Image (cartoon, rainbow, N blue to C red):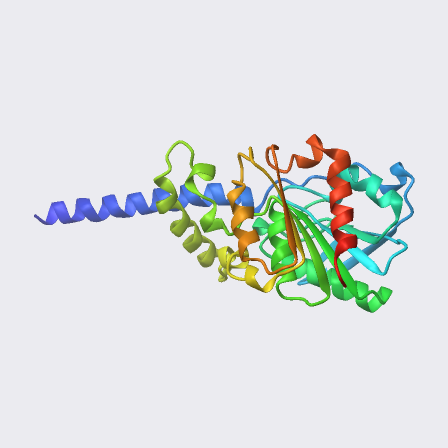
Length: 288
């Protein structure tokens, strides 16, 4: 009888250890993704800019500032494994118009920024630090956040906390990590999501003494947000477009939503001219 108890205990601990190591390996891909270096500069597109750095939690966040004709400042919030060079290659035609001030920055652990990415869970603090720097050093007071994917979720979280964020453009956000359904994350074995997520959350808490899942939860604060333009593709294979529909319903007026036929964050690729026309129209139409 005693041997059976020992075998069961060893088996349970073996399963726990296996799950811990497996989950830890998967999580490390999101916590410490490979650093992507910047390959392009605003000079390559004939843009005038100013380089500046923001220091937060012993990490330097590198950013570019573009002066425009408006008192409004547009801050681009990057998604997963994205740096300011990648964003610049997409938005430089918008920056050429100089209709607004603009900022593009490298998230922690990417481009020229220091620190560790950690799923982007602390990017909301970086965005707030950038806003505070702009208010202190540039005298700017009104900000519009423009995020894609993870960056869209972060932008909405920041908007829920700051009155100086007067509008948000959210392209393909997710509600929170727990609500990224099993269809998107565990296509082959959907039932594993119910086991994986609680274990992953526990592992992260043990490692960082903070609940990173909670820091990436916009669903719980979205009712504090207004002046949002949601963009999402019906064929998004990473984050189901129903995430945006649910967030849209819970967001306060004024708000808009544009559902396209695109895959994840590909609305810009399918409709490049209409995409920026709609974004500019939305920002200009807001009653500030």
